[in-house]
Length: 169
Ligand code: MG
Image (tube, rainbow, N blue to C red; front, side, top):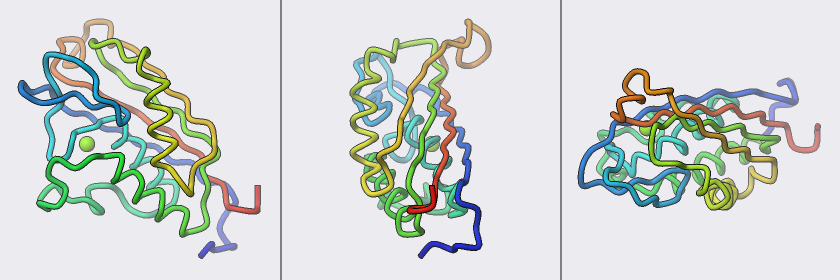
């Protein structure tokens, strides 16, 4: 239940990065994207949803995804991160939060991800379920050819969310 001694708004931040690996599907924002390589990880390695989950968990004070879904747990091997996001949303909603807005940033040299942003937004809103309803913005940039992202070794994502207490906004 909501703790009404707590402030009515809470901001959260999340960051994640995964390296490319051959023979893996590329899944970003819950959407399968055609690309020669996918991201390596215990789950489907959806770097955008992982950053979003950590931002929601951070705002709600509910830990982080490493605690909720440890990569040593066989249950999460190859997991659809949209299902993990739905569980994070369920927990935040159960604590009395709703999403005011989420601002998401993908940093990738390739592929171009913005053509897939509408589908990602739809999948994310579905997964957010009871905590959702707020605005979800998806943005993308390259790393201007610099560093590990610039060399095409992986993809990073950043997420900022604002949660509001239900009935107090
Ligand atoms: Mg991750």
